[in-house]
Amino acid sequence: MIKYYCKKCNLDNDGPMCANCGKKLSGSTMHSVWAIRRLPLTDGGVWLGALGITSLVVLILFLLIFGAEFFLTGTEKMLMLLSSNLPLMVIGILPISMLLTALLLTLQGSEVLFYSLESYGVILRTWHGASRIKCWARLTGAKMDQVMEDENGQGVIMGHERITLWKDVKQVRYNPRRAEIKLYHASRIAPMVLRIPQEEYPSTETLIKKFCKNK
Image 1 (cartoon, helix red, strand yellow):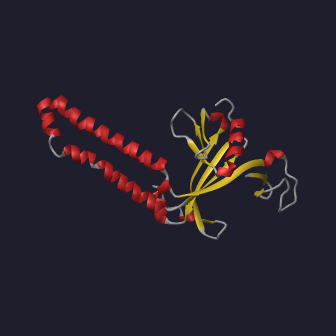
Image 2: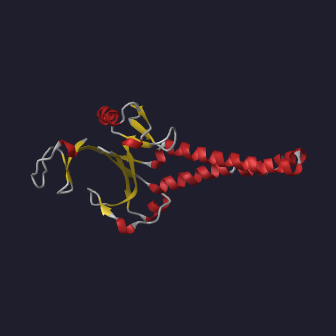
Image 3: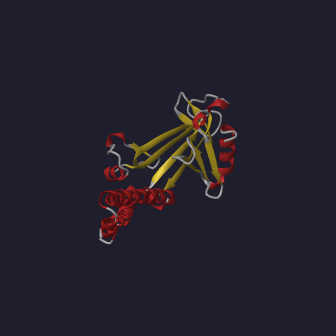
């Protein structure tokens, strides 16, 4: 949704005039803003990431344990170790980690992703309920001194802020079906994911292509 920002009043407006002070706002104050409410527990990307990291840890442990056994004692002792309960114990890390992930995501509850497309880049702020448990479940310290009120008068905390500059974007991937756009600093590594309301996707994609030409 296109908004006009008044610096004097620190206020977004629906039109090119500030609803508070009446100042006429220029086109340079325009930016696109939207919010997405979601449950991290239902985010497939989070689950795939947790599965990938845990699988990598299990693989590294296998290589370290059985590789070291092979080089230090030979094939026979390594095969004896493989026939023991140790492989199952190492593999057991995988379901335990996924259960822990499910617990943490459940405790996180819902969150609101607030996006702002500016002339210099994208700002993503993640807000969640004002709760120590919700902070700890996100592996961050309790920020109870930073509680604010949302439009419903409920206490919320900004758990995360990320800024991606257009000049730093190396690659852009568009996904109209999922209404998502991914901005990469480096190919395939830690993109900023723009989750967009379906009805706002076409105009947002057009704007992104304007800022990220030939990427």
